[in-house]
Image (cartoon, rainbow, N blue to C red; front, side, top):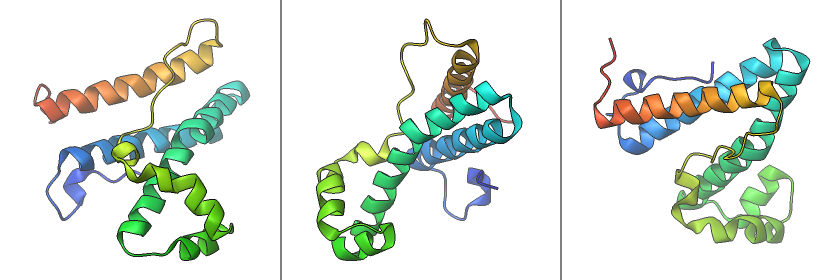
Length: 140
């Protein structure tokens, strides 16, 4: 299963770890929706996963590989593209943008009800995690 709780990890939870755990839960939720929901809702979940989460995940993994000393050529071999293509696509991502969770769509007016429900559910998951981080919610 994709979801791993912070308590299951050997290191103490930090803000970055909490954000990563939230994103893991969101990805797990979207994958469940793809396989278990109605056709429309599954397609909307797929759309969110492909447009928001997978590009973020690719940036995160490339950044992690570079920090661990992997060359651009090595990353390119793994991804099946040239060193130049990898460097052109990800070299500008040296900022902290990879550490931030993927953004959720801001406008949901005028879109299908299923899509609105998916985005609303993901926003609630984020709000809950932020409240936990601030100490406003206590897990039982």
